[in-house]
Length: 381
Ligand SMILES: *Cc1c(COP(=O)(O)O)cnc(C)c1O
Image (tube, rainbow, N blue to C red):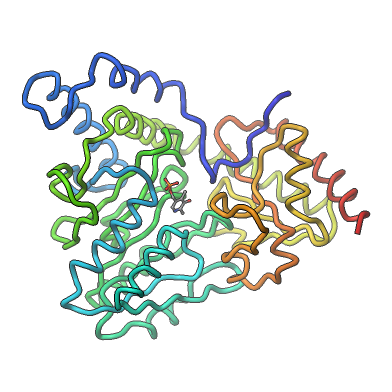
């Protein structure tokens, strides 16, 4: 059976050219990047090249890039690292209710250690309210952490403005850009970003490698003890092959950015307009304009999204009912709850996220089957 994959926000496949670039570092180039002999220096050189590519893609300098094992680790290091290093200045952090659990649970963990956290509401379209942000700022606020783009509803926050506000009040600004990297253009200097998290497997590199950008001069503490790797901020022998893969993937994506972006937008807009035309009682979640090009999130009222997913899987379609991190009981998504959906509607919601290899024919197949399945599942109630 042909697999039609519409879950690129959960993870992407690894591009052929990325695999090719990595292979030598699984094989003959196995040296430890900290070693002095040439086999080790080869790994160090490859890693530095990748660091450069990643820095270039976001307008940073290469010494501002720290490699990690994933997006979650980057978020932990960014949020906790800043909190620990700036304790003497204050203990208040501002974030939003729609952050990924890597940020939300880092904040929860900091609360247990005596920090205070304000979780900003979002408007029904999924956007943070900048007035609420400003009024939440206190004398002891040390960090604002707001995601660039949401993993469920795709909304893109006004990052540049948030950064400007943060800096006006002398507060550091971290953004979880795991969904945004590769899908929109980011320049950390122009957008006033002090720390930024990314993860390779969301832009066609393998799972298990990420990076944190930290602006030169920003104080943060390591959260894992060990060796002196990554300027003594992230202990552990570097995953050279995957770091090389992540560098290649980011280079490829920004080389062909306009074409990729248009491809995703065309598929998404076609999907939205056909679903609106063909299926009654639906609700598109998240701002229609300020959203990632490949993201769609639609509630089909009266349809059990878990059942829908199961039926879609039977015909080779991969999509998502809630964030890929939630499993078991259909606990309504915290993001959909934050934008005001009731439990029933939240549990009738399907996220479809497009990627490079999707075709219009794939999307037509998806639409035809959604029309049939939502009709059948609604009849059952
Ligand atoms: C996927 C994701 C993460 C976590 O990244 P991992 O590499 O899977 O740990 C964090 N934040 C957002 C917005 C994500 O989409």
